Every structure is written in structure tokens, then in C-alpha cells.
Image 1 (cartoon, rainbow, N blue to C red):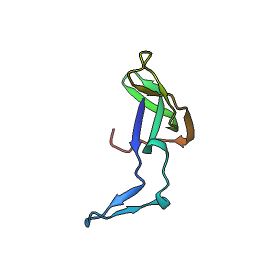
Image 2: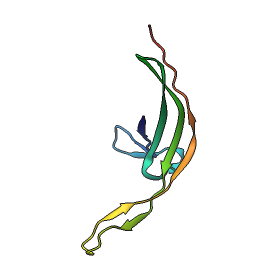
Image 3: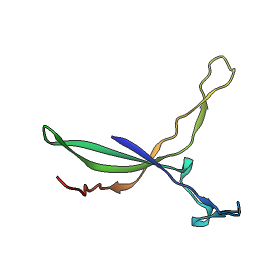
Length: 91
């Protein structure tokens, strides 16, 4: 399973003033990707394991052989760490 989380490098105050956070530094594309493996516990129960966090670097190349336009982002994914999900609830 893959999910993503948008990360912002600034906040907009009620006065419409933009205030940078983390010194305005952010990850490329302002998005973290989370990837989990599925582990079947029983026929009706699945656990998400092996959580990996990545972000993608930006590298745009021309993808139009006719020269009209169009680009594709082929940037590499960079590992940003591990993540673990813990289920909290009633069974």
C-alpha cells in the first residue's frame, strides 16, 4: 500500500501573511511517500509492515518526440527513513 502526505514550508496567517516554517526549507515537491507491505495474519486480518518513507527528486525531461511540448518527471526516489503503524482500537 502506498500513501502520501503533503508537507508545507510556510503557513498562511489569518492576516494573509505568509510565514516560513523550518527556515523555509522543504523536501522536493513538498510530498512524503509512505510504502507498506501487506502481511496476512488470518483470512480476514491484514497487517501493514515494513513502512518506508521516500521523497522524489525533480528531474524533468522532454517526452514529446514531435517537439510540441510535454515533459516527464523521472527524478529518483530518495529514502527518508522508516515508519511504523500501530492499530489502536477494539476487536
